[in-house]
Each structure stands twice: as C-alpha cells, then as structure tokens.
Length: 252
Image (cartoon, rainbow, N blue to C red):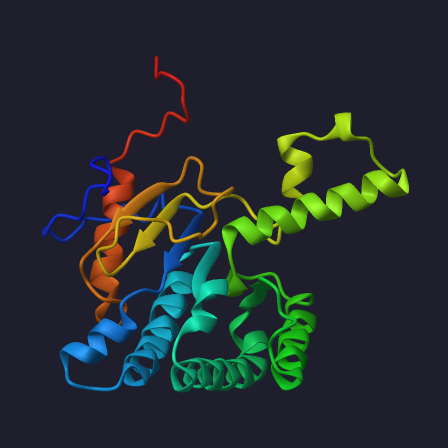
C-alpha cells in the first residue's frame, strides 16, 4: 500500500534559498538497474552511470555548503542480486575509494562508512580504513556511505552494544535515553537528516535510517538516479524549504 502523505515532486524547478539550506541531506540511490533496462543495457551499466552521478551531486553538495550527505549505496538485502551486478558494484566502490584517497585532503571532504564491513573483501576494508584515517585529519563536508547497511540491523547492533555495556557494568538499563542510544548507532555524532531524497518513485524507506528519519522531510521523484541532476536537487531543496517543520508540536 502506498502512503498518501508521501507526495511526489511537482514539475516546477525550485527556487532555492541558499541562505537556509538543509544541514543534512540523505539520498537513496535508486533506479540504476531500471535506467539501464529501459535502454536495453545490462543493469551493471546503470550502476556505472549512477556512480558518476554520485560524484557530481556529492561535489555540488560540498560546493553549496551542505554539511552532511548520507547515501544508501548497498543494502544488506542487495547481496541477493545477480553475482555480476554485485561484483560490478564492489568494483565501482574500489575505484571510488582509490580516487578518494588521492583527493580527500585536497577537497577537504570527509568520508564515513556506515554498515557491517565484515563481508567486504580484505582489500576494500583496508581502503575504507585508509579513508577513515584521512577523514580524522579533515574538517569539511562529511559524506557517509552506507554499505551492507540496514536500518533494522543498525538498531539491533546498537542494542547489542548497549547490552554488552550493561553486562560489563559500565551502564545501567535505566540509564538509557534516546540521546544515549544514538551514540551506539553507526551514525553516532551525526545529526539526523533534514531531507531524504528518493529517486525512482518508490514510496518507502527500504530499511534506510529508520531511527534517524523520524522527523525527516521526504522528497520523492520519478527521476531515476543516473538522470538525477543539480536541477532536481534544487527542486528537492526548494520543496524542503516550503515545508512547515513542527516536530510534533504546534507553531505559535
């Protein structure tokens, strides 16, 4: 069942007030496979074009002053896809990490990886560690890349970590607050997204940032991720800027 309150985007280009941008934008990178299939291409071709779109949008977010960008690149469920598709995604990830290691300090862009990295190859995990080490020295825009990530798994992981601390006697169950629990999540130290963008038209979260998106504004567009442009990002931000964010309260 599709939820009626998740409205798709309108067709008008957005007029963005660059003086009041969302602090944190999250994006579900959806539609790569469909983009390729509509063109009679293998699904892997869509992932290759989508990876270039990510570079373009991430760079633009940095340039206009977005402090935090979080992208859903590969979910815990994506391992079920055809092996050649998974291999292509991992190959693209390797290429991106190698490029990032060479450019992060120049661009002052920090990278953070959210999810369970253990199923990744040793080579990929080593590259992730190198990016993390470089990020520790930087202060710029933080781009979090969710790999082998699931929102439910993240909450379970956090609950297990808290339970271990309880067993060790460092905390008590009654000490737990929402703020404390957030420190056990992969996203610890990062503010919740202000705006979640979902290309591809699907009206669901797909197990992405379930805890963090409690009051996040959602923008859905039928544009597939490889075709996502700066202009579409402007529409998303303009839509966000027209929202009345009350966080459960009433404006006086």
